[in-house]
Amino acid sequence: MKIVTKILATAAGLTVGTLSQAGVLVTQWDALTVGSWSAAAPASVTILGDTLSWGTGTNGPSSLVITNPGVKELNTYIGGGNPPSGFITQSLKLTHNNNPIAATTPSSSLSGATLDVSLKLTPTSPAAAPQEDLGVFNYHIKFLETSNSGICADPASPTPCNDIFVLVEGLLNQSWLYDDYTYFINAFPIEGGALSPLANNICLAAGAANGCIGFTTVEGQSNVLNFGLTISTEPLSVPEPAGVALLGLALAGAGLARRRVSQAN
Image 1 (tube, one colour):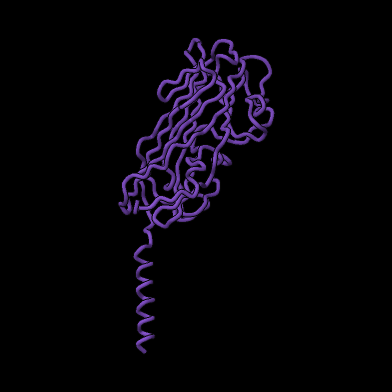
Image 2 (cartoon, rainbow, N blue to C red; image 1 turned 30 degrees about the horizontal axis):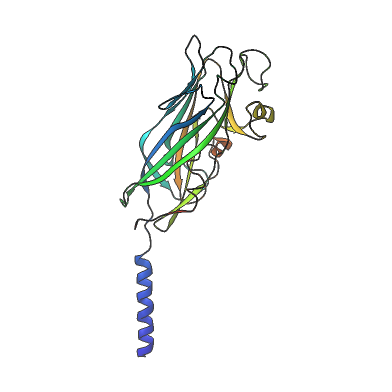
Protein backbone atom coordinates (compact mmCIF):
# COMPACT_ATOMS: atom_id res chain seq x y z
CA MET A 1 0.00 0.00 0.00
CA LYS A 2 2.88 2.37 0.80
CA ILE A 3 4.40 1.60 -2.59
CA VAL A 4 1.12 2.38 -4.38
CA THR A 5 0.71 5.59 -2.39
CA LYS A 6 4.25 6.64 -3.26
CA ILE A 7 3.68 5.94 -6.96
CA LEU A 8 0.43 7.92 -6.95
CA ALA A 9 2.10 10.81 -5.13
CA THR A 10 4.96 10.82 -7.61
CA ALA A 11 2.54 10.75 -10.56
CA ALA A 12 0.55 13.59 -9.04
CA GLY A 13 3.72 15.61 -8.61
CA LEU A 14 4.68 15.08 -12.25
CA THR A 15 1.20 16.11 -13.36
CA VAL A 16 1.28 19.30 -11.31
CA GLY A 17 4.74 20.10 -12.66
CA THR A 18 3.56 19.67 -16.26
CA LEU A 19 0.51 21.82 -15.71
CA SER A 20 2.52 24.52 -13.99
CA GLN A 21 4.64 24.88 -17.14
CA ALA A 22 1.68 25.01 -19.54
CA GLY A 23 1.38 28.25 -21.46
CA VAL A 24 -1.49 30.73 -21.49
CA LEU A 25 -3.24 31.63 -24.73
CA VAL A 26 -2.81 35.30 -25.63
CA THR A 27 -6.16 36.70 -26.80
CA GLN A 28 -5.10 40.27 -27.50
CA TRP A 29 -1.93 41.97 -28.78
CA ASP A 30 -0.60 45.39 -29.63
CA ALA A 31 0.82 45.05 -33.14
CA LEU A 32 3.35 47.46 -34.60
CA THR A 33 3.93 47.07 -38.34
CA VAL A 34 6.56 49.21 -40.04
CA GLY A 35 7.36 49.11 -43.74
CA SER A 36 10.26 50.83 -45.49
CA TRP A 37 12.06 50.71 -48.82
CA SER A 38 15.58 49.29 -48.68
CA ALA A 39 16.41 49.09 -52.39
CA ALA A 40 15.17 50.16 -55.81
CA ALA A 41 16.24 49.80 -59.41
CA PRO A 42 17.52 51.51 -61.44
CA ALA A 43 19.84 53.80 -59.52
CA SER A 44 17.98 56.87 -60.78
CA VAL A 45 14.96 55.99 -58.60
CA THR A 46 14.87 58.15 -55.49
CA ILE A 47 14.34 56.59 -52.06
CA LEU A 48 13.25 59.21 -49.54
CA GLY A 49 11.82 57.86 -46.31
CA ASP A 50 8.62 55.94 -47.09
CA THR A 51 8.57 57.06 -50.74
CA LEU A 52 10.02 55.79 -54.01
CA SER A 53 9.82 58.31 -56.86
CA TRP A 54 10.89 58.36 -60.49
CA GLY A 55 10.40 60.31 -63.71
CA THR A 56 9.24 63.86 -64.38
CA GLY A 57 5.92 65.17 -65.55
CA THR A 58 3.38 67.97 -65.31
CA ASN A 59 1.90 66.52 -62.11
CA GLY A 60 5.24 65.56 -60.66
CA PRO A 61 7.02 62.20 -60.57
CA SER A 62 5.33 58.83 -60.17
CA SER A 63 5.76 57.32 -56.72
CA LEU A 64 5.12 54.36 -54.44
CA VAL A 65 4.32 55.52 -50.91
CA ILE A 66 4.09 53.46 -47.70
CA THR A 67 1.73 54.60 -44.95
CA ASN A 68 2.46 52.86 -41.65
CA PRO A 69 -0.48 52.37 -39.27
CA GLY A 70 1.21 52.81 -35.91
CA VAL A 71 0.29 50.51 -33.02
CA LYS A 72 -2.98 48.64 -33.58
CA GLU A 73 -4.95 46.40 -31.23
CA LEU A 74 -5.25 42.87 -32.59
CA ASN A 75 -7.48 40.10 -31.20
CA THR A 76 -6.55 36.45 -31.58
CA TYR A 77 -9.10 34.55 -33.65
CA ILE A 78 -9.70 31.18 -31.97
CA GLY A 79 -10.04 28.90 -34.96
CA GLY A 80 -9.35 28.96 -38.69
CA GLY A 81 -11.27 29.43 -41.92
CA ASN A 82 -12.46 32.97 -42.67
CA PRO A 83 -11.75 35.43 -39.82
CA PRO A 84 -14.66 37.72 -38.82
CA SER A 85 -14.06 41.41 -39.44
CA GLY A 86 -13.56 42.06 -35.73
CA PHE A 87 -10.36 40.01 -35.87
CA ILE A 88 -8.80 41.92 -38.77
CA THR A 89 -6.86 45.09 -38.02
CA GLN A 90 -5.39 47.59 -40.43
CA SER A 91 -1.79 47.07 -41.44
CA LEU A 92 0.29 49.16 -43.82
CA LYS A 93 -1.00 50.90 -46.94
CA LEU A 94 0.71 51.17 -50.34
CA THR A 95 -0.22 54.00 -52.70
CA HIS A 96 0.95 54.18 -56.30
CA ASN A 97 0.65 57.77 -57.51
CA ASN A 98 0.54 56.92 -61.20
CA ASN A 99 1.34 60.29 -62.71
CA PRO A 100 1.98 60.63 -66.46
CA ILE A 101 5.70 61.10 -66.91
CA ALA A 102 7.95 61.87 -69.84
CA ALA A 103 8.87 59.08 -72.25
CA THR A 104 10.51 56.41 -70.14
CA THR A 105 13.56 54.26 -70.69
CA PRO A 106 14.76 51.25 -68.68
CA SER A 107 17.38 53.51 -67.13
CA SER A 108 14.93 56.09 -65.77
CA SER A 109 11.76 54.38 -64.51
CA LEU A 110 11.16 51.95 -61.66
CA SER A 111 11.75 48.29 -62.52
CA GLY A 112 12.06 46.72 -59.08
CA ALA A 113 12.19 47.42 -55.35
CA THR A 114 12.57 45.73 -51.98
CA LEU A 115 10.00 46.36 -49.27
CA ASP A 116 11.17 45.62 -45.72
CA VAL A 117 8.40 44.91 -43.22
CA SER A 118 8.95 44.54 -39.48
CA LEU A 119 6.40 43.22 -37.01
CA LYS A 120 6.50 43.66 -33.25
CA LEU A 121 3.87 42.13 -30.97
CA THR A 122 3.15 42.96 -27.35
CA PRO A 123 0.77 40.60 -25.46
CA THR A 124 -1.87 42.67 -23.65
CA SER A 125 -4.41 40.04 -22.57
CA PRO A 126 -3.02 38.53 -20.56
CA ALA A 127 -0.26 41.09 -20.23
CA ALA A 128 2.96 39.16 -20.51
CA ALA A 129 6.54 39.51 -21.62
CA PRO A 130 7.92 42.69 -23.19
CA GLN A 131 7.41 43.42 -26.86
CA GLU A 132 8.49 40.58 -29.14
CA ASP A 133 10.40 41.58 -32.26
CA LEU A 134 9.61 39.05 -34.97
CA GLY A 135 12.21 40.53 -37.28
CA VAL A 136 12.36 42.24 -40.67
CA PHE A 137 11.10 40.44 -43.73
CA ASN A 138 12.04 41.38 -47.27
CA TYR A 139 9.57 41.39 -50.16
CA HIS A 140 10.75 41.89 -53.70
CA ILE A 141 8.64 43.77 -56.21
CA LYS A 142 8.86 43.95 -59.99
CA PHE A 143 7.34 46.96 -61.68
CA LEU A 144 6.68 48.07 -65.24
CA GLU A 145 6.13 51.73 -66.09
CA THR A 146 4.18 51.23 -69.31
CA SER A 147 4.16 53.43 -72.38
CA ASN A 148 1.34 55.96 -72.60
CA SER A 149 0.59 54.83 -76.16
CA GLY A 150 0.62 51.68 -78.25
CA ILE A 151 -0.62 48.18 -77.46
CA CYS A 152 -1.06 47.37 -73.77
CA ALA A 153 0.24 44.15 -72.20
CA ASP A 154 -3.09 43.97 -70.35
CA PRO A 155 -5.81 43.71 -73.02
CA ALA A 156 -8.37 44.97 -70.48
CA SER A 157 -6.36 48.14 -69.84
CA PRO A 158 -7.53 51.54 -70.99
CA THR A 159 -5.14 53.79 -72.89
CA PRO A 160 -2.77 55.07 -71.55
CA CYS A 161 -1.82 51.58 -70.43
CA ASN A 162 -2.04 50.55 -66.79
CA ASP A 163 1.30 50.14 -65.04
CA ILE A 164 2.07 46.68 -63.66
CA PHE A 165 2.96 45.85 -60.02
CA VAL A 166 4.15 42.31 -59.23
CA LEU A 167 4.92 40.85 -55.81
CA VAL A 168 7.65 38.31 -56.51
CA GLU A 169 7.13 36.43 -53.27
CA GLY A 170 4.48 36.23 -50.59
CA LEU A 171 3.72 33.59 -47.99
CA LEU A 172 0.56 32.49 -46.24
CA ASN A 173 -0.29 31.12 -42.80
CA GLN A 174 3.15 31.46 -41.30
CA SER A 175 3.36 30.15 -37.75
CA TRP A 176 5.34 30.71 -34.61
CA LEU A 177 5.29 29.22 -31.12
CA TYR A 178 4.71 31.51 -28.16
CA ASP A 179 4.43 30.15 -24.62
CA ASP A 180 3.46 26.65 -25.81
CA TYR A 181 0.77 27.91 -28.22
CA THR A 182 1.10 28.01 -32.00
CA TYR A 183 -0.22 31.12 -33.74
CA PHE A 184 -0.70 31.85 -37.44
CA ILE A 185 -0.24 35.28 -38.95
CA ASN A 186 -1.54 36.63 -42.26
CA ALA A 187 -1.82 39.94 -44.09
CA PHE A 188 -3.97 40.62 -47.13
CA PRO A 189 -5.64 43.50 -48.98
CA ILE A 190 -8.85 44.64 -47.32
CA GLU A 191 -9.75 47.46 -49.71
CA GLY A 192 -8.45 49.20 -52.80
CA GLY A 193 -6.59 47.16 -55.38
CA ALA A 194 -6.48 43.40 -55.12
CA LEU A 195 -3.46 41.21 -55.63
CA SER A 196 -4.38 38.34 -57.91
CA PRO A 197 -2.77 36.01 -60.48
CA LEU A 198 -1.94 37.98 -63.62
CA ALA A 199 -2.09 36.68 -67.18
CA ASN A 200 1.22 35.24 -68.36
CA ASN A 201 1.75 37.96 -70.97
CA ILE A 202 1.37 40.63 -68.25
CA CYS A 203 3.86 38.80 -66.02
CA LEU A 204 6.29 38.54 -68.93
CA ALA A 205 6.01 42.26 -69.67
CA ALA A 206 7.02 43.00 -66.05
CA GLY A 207 9.92 40.52 -66.18
CA ALA A 208 8.19 38.04 -63.88
CA ALA A 209 7.53 34.30 -64.19
CA ASN A 210 4.22 32.87 -65.40
CA GLY A 211 1.48 32.85 -62.78
CA CYS A 212 2.84 35.92 -60.99
CA ILE A 213 0.81 37.75 -58.34
CA GLY A 214 0.12 41.46 -58.69
CA PHE A 215 -2.24 44.15 -59.91
CA THR A 216 -2.35 46.85 -62.57
CA THR A 217 -2.63 50.53 -61.71
CA VAL A 218 -4.57 53.17 -63.62
CA GLU A 219 -2.73 56.08 -65.22
CA GLY A 220 -3.41 59.48 -63.68
CA GLN A 221 -4.79 58.07 -60.42
CA SER A 222 -3.63 57.26 -56.90
CA ASN A 223 -4.04 53.49 -56.68
CA VAL A 224 -4.32 52.33 -53.06
CA LEU A 225 -3.72 48.89 -51.56
CA ASN A 226 -4.73 48.62 -47.87
CA PHE A 227 -3.61 45.53 -45.97
CA GLY A 228 -5.26 43.87 -42.98
CA LEU A 229 -3.47 41.76 -40.36
CA THR A 230 -4.76 38.71 -38.48
CA ILE A 231 -3.53 36.31 -35.81
CA SER A 232 -5.31 32.98 -35.38
CA THR A 233 -4.85 29.66 -33.62
CA GLU A 234 -5.44 27.64 -36.82
CA PRO A 235 -4.53 28.25 -40.47
CA LEU A 236 -6.84 30.64 -42.27
CA SER A 237 -8.51 30.24 -45.63
CA VAL A 238 -8.93 33.15 -48.01
CA PRO A 239 -11.34 35.80 -46.72
CA GLU A 240 -13.66 37.50 -49.19
CA PRO A 241 -13.37 39.80 -51.02
CA ALA A 242 -9.62 39.45 -50.95
CA GLY A 243 -9.77 36.28 -53.07
CA VAL A 244 -6.35 34.87 -53.72
CA ALA A 245 -4.87 38.08 -52.36
CA LEU A 246 -3.91 36.22 -49.20
CA LEU A 247 -0.95 35.13 -51.28
CA GLY A 248 0.15 38.72 -50.97
CA LEU A 249 2.07 40.53 -48.35
CA ALA A 250 1.84 38.04 -45.47
CA LEU A 251 4.01 39.52 -42.77
CA ALA A 252 6.22 36.53 -42.37
CA GLY A 253 9.03 34.82 -44.11
CA ALA A 254 11.05 31.68 -43.74
CA GLY A 255 12.68 33.14 -40.65
CA LEU A 256 9.34 33.36 -38.85
CA ALA A 257 8.14 29.85 -39.62
CA ARG A 258 8.51 27.56 -36.66
CA ARG A 259 10.25 30.29 -34.68
CA ARG A 260 9.95 29.69 -30.95
CA VAL A 261 9.14 32.69 -28.80
CA SER A 262 8.87 32.00 -25.09
CA GLN A 263 7.72 34.18 -22.23
CA ALA A 264 10.60 32.77 -20.29
CA ASN A 265 12.93 34.61 -22.68
